[in-house]
Length: 108
Image (tube, rainbow, N blue to C red; front, side):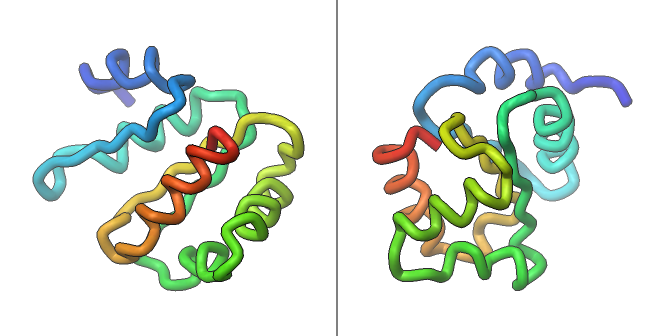
């Protein structure tokens, strides 16, 4: 599949400490570009699609430290930087607070 123009812009910032948010209208390729990036990087990584309620379960613990350690185990990346991809993030509004914590404390 052809890489979208935005791919190069995003991939050069993938190791930056901040989150990267892709927004846009429906059916314009947001998930496709995330999948392309997901398939490209070699760091420990996880994919969540919040259209599936089961994908939100790892983030429902009230202890954010526990969430981080459980995600690291899932990715098999203890001690390495963890990259998390979340599709349909609007279905779980609380996730923005959780991810900010993990970015600030663990450089996720």
